[in-house]
Length: 461
Picture 1 (cartoon, rainbow, N blue to C red):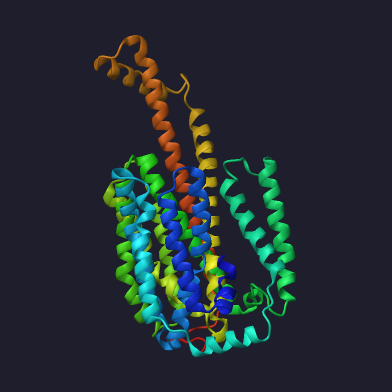
Picture 2 (spheres, one colour):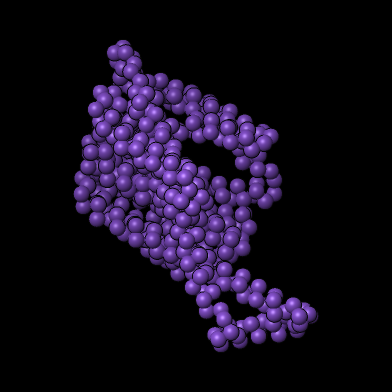
């Protein structure tokens, strides 16, 4: 729904489309919360995703049309605080619910928030006159729906999501199912690009990617999605599976990073109106690279303080990505293009998240197997370190009262458990290194962008 949310906002009316989306998201959240079985939950989640797909895109376009270019950095910073506040407190609330209550409340908690949102939007959000005129003109000329484009983009993104999500589990292209979804997704993209480029009223205006600032900004947002979603998903996994944290403790470690982001976000808005946005983005990528390099030096003796500090270091640089990139993306765009631009940027960020999570999990699995295989090669009686460790552990278990006959087997099991933990930790280190290289490789693209000093950009509606 994200890539066509801009078109839907233009056709239905942005405020009306937003309120419909919020209402449906609230209702489907309630349906998820009361689902009696997995089938009902999956169906409700599909409907929830369809309802929520356009929310972020419409929100950003509202900001663009409400604030003049010189004030957009501050507006995006204020918006960013709200956006970051959710992920900051979400892991803690989710962990507490998971550990102490029922999973149903992970969905039911959305219901009062959605109801409050509907009330506030209906009272305080206005539809710009320019958009009302554009919508009337669009409908007067006869509404033409690009069904072919919609089907192609749905097949491309939907099956790409399935391929990336299930690839590692199903052993990638050795699976006929994954091979089929990948081929259909690739063919759909191959047909989608020329089709949309030759339409007078395309459902997804991909020609916008040809504009230098917008095209590079979407690449940056895709990389940002890889970093944010990838690390947010697998750092708690590291803390729980390797270090042994509870879901609540892992959430608390992430929350420290969210708080750092919230504190830095206002500074980003102030600097964004005074400093060239390219410098801020360059600074942010350097911070992200150094933070990932720092994370690549974590080990199995990781303390809660070290985990929280590492996340805070990374999170402090995120506002300098979100706000300046969004500001630069609108340089040279017309007011009538804000809905579509917001939709495409959210596609890039979410697609980056999908790629990031899939890549991280694939690398973790493959590198863990590789490290474990290399370590196992050294576990033989000819290795004096192995022999000494086995002897010491066996004697310690016997001293604790374990039968001599089973002490050796238990010592071997303990050693293998420690080996598995070390292999997993090394695989996480490898992933941090890969993400670090991706971040540093993106920095030269800044040289190709047009500056947006002082929040310069396209005219507001």
